[in-house]
Amino acid sequence: MSEDVQVVCPECEDLNLDEFIFESETIEQLGFISSEEKTDAEEWAGNGLCLNLKCIEQWCERRNIDSRFKMGVPLISTPKHDNIVEAKYETVYKCEECNIGEYTYNSHNLNHECDNAFCGSVRFDLEQTTTSGGVLGDQGYEFRSFYKKALGERSEVVDPPYLFNKAPNPFLQNQKVVNIKLEKEEFHTSQKRNLSWFECLHHHLKPLEDLKGTRFQKIVLSVYMDKTLELQHIEPLWMYAQRAKLGGELKSAFTIFENNPELFSELIENKKHVLQPDEGTIQCVYGLIKSLLPWPSDRIKDETIIMEASNVLKKLSSKGFIEQMNKFNLIVPTYSFNGQIQIPIGLIECICIINAVENHSGIDKFGIDVKNAIFPNRSKREHWKGIMTSKGQQFVDVVLPKLVSNYLLRE
Image (cartoon, rainbow, N blue to C red; front, side, top):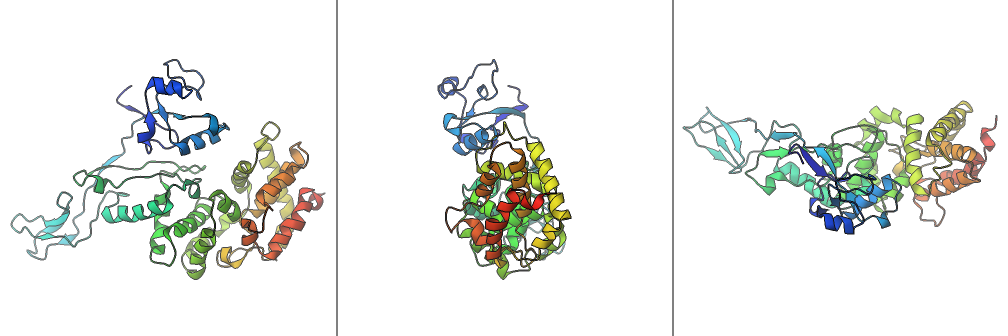
């Protein structure tokens, strides 16, 4: 293989490098083909395999394959990244000993030294700064390590829409190394950005650090606020809670915001308009709903459902239905963005999708199945019941069935 090419896992790149295997015999024993002759892309693993269980699960999910029958993820070849940056340190402190030189950071001795050869003053109490945009110093990596430890292996909390990654502190790994490979990843959304989950959320987590609550709760809060308002990755809060396997952490996370309403006030003020339902938000919610239950893709064409759901949205708007809904408070105060919203985020999109599926899937009562998957009714502890007011629950139990049957959308 060319020196300009490297092999990586399509799910984690090289984050689980210790679980990569390259031996042909082992690859064949795990049910893959290791020969140079490429066959089915899902069977050929001539570059090697990643055996990380999370990678296998995600790789199979993207291909609608049962992960129980796959023992690895075929590695892929990719050009080596040249995004290497040397950490150059700024001179920002005037030497008070000689009044001539300036202090610069010495990464070998972990101190600041006066650059006046005739002075030699050394200080250990000055803050480290860099000109390498995005490169963190020891303090920044320590802060990040706290939150990466708090998140642990719970990738579903951030992915989607962010990339779940675990990057070490190169400063602590080798204090003599000043070449730092920048993380260059993409979101799992239509918006392509070269940022990991921590890089996206850092500016939210920083002001939360000293507030009451766990770091995991602060991650949960920051994720939902940022992905909703910044990325327009619209997901009903109860679906997020279910997907991320959140228990009481959800309420505790939003209680932080409820007790400190100034935290996201500017973000809400500037971005509240993105909460208006449109074809883009319908498409986002539709993709998330498909993962809730077995989806008959042979009978349901995504483009058709999204188009029809958009037509339902127009009908709801023209008939004044959304305006009527806004007269009622359907979400409990804790989750209302400090009183800024009354209709739960993503609810309108769910209504449109349920109608579109029921009336165009060709499967009897499939819209009701979708509705029950979105609003499960197995116990009184389901997330949506704790997020919606009694009026909101009444809406789901009484009004939605009529909407599914097209009762309110008849011409």
